[in-house]
Image (cartoon, rainbow, N blue to C red; front, side, top):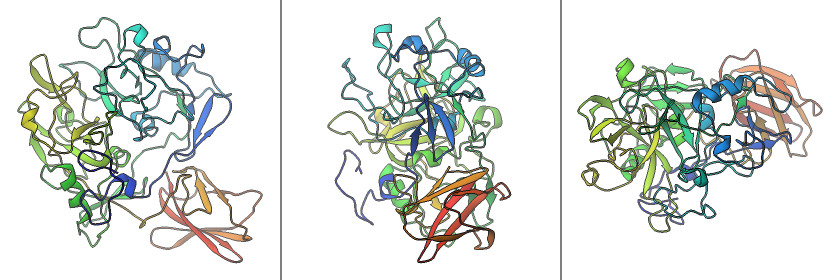
Length: 464
């Protein structure tokens, strides 16, 4: 947990800075190394290539990188683990792997990466920073995706959204050469397969100023807070909000907020924010004088490698143009749908030409869209389970769910109910085949009860 500057040992309920991602239970990483060069993410149902070492020489370096076009072509011919249906991931699929236990190396001027921490789980995935021997920067660890920006960046460049696991950001990158370069931008690549329905939203307007996404089990406020505020104020606004008869609103974490980005929209192409039209976004005038839409705070600190002030920035999602100052003018440098970070406090006037290589606009006073769980405190622990005695995977599910438990009870049957408490499916429990077919269930969030002789275990799951 962090205050406006640094990590702190604890923050109590009702205190300033309460409401950070560390203070809420959520799905935590849960991977299985399949031992064949692939890793399965139990939470998402996606299977990943374990390492971006494409040439198989045991080193992850510039030689393993590809252009956007090469990555697309390579996916069609990629074979691993006995599978040939690999694909280049979407931006939402790739972002599912990000971990904000990483430390942003921005400002680091050394050459050794030994003390740095990337934004991906290196216990399961191969990773390396930029190849300095090939003239790259340490932060050049951008991973390619199949998601193109519907507009352009940097004054007309076709742009692909990528995830940088070195510095913990989503940015748009030219599919061709970077400005001033002659060779197409090169990317690391992790191919993916399975669960093609992952991260497809299923929104419902509840008619009370809230929107439910049954694909994620989250309820969102339809409006934003209508004013730019600092991070501490954003946390307080969410924690103290009483709206639509709910008092358990909170600031979303980075993955939650990115889950509602609509990458088919942008201010330049649809005259809207990059979000479903069910939502309302407050219009702003950006640094270039254009009608635009704002940056939205998350409750996720974007920690830096520095010992002093390592928690001074927090992650935001840009639902409008991700502005930057380049070549003497303001422009969209990274695209609507980017995830960057801003100082939690300070004066935007101190950054008249932005910050960083592309002059990222520093606003500090950003917008808020609050969220709440459909079920109060589902309590997912490190393994993705509800409590400590039951596990359900994959999350979200599509055709089936697998149930495991460490309870010594003798279980008799499984009951599945919808959000209204209505029973929609029952079946006898069989320890030898703990798999439940859910193909007939509509998309949505469900309660599941495992009934035993001595107890009953409860959990929730999402059907996509």
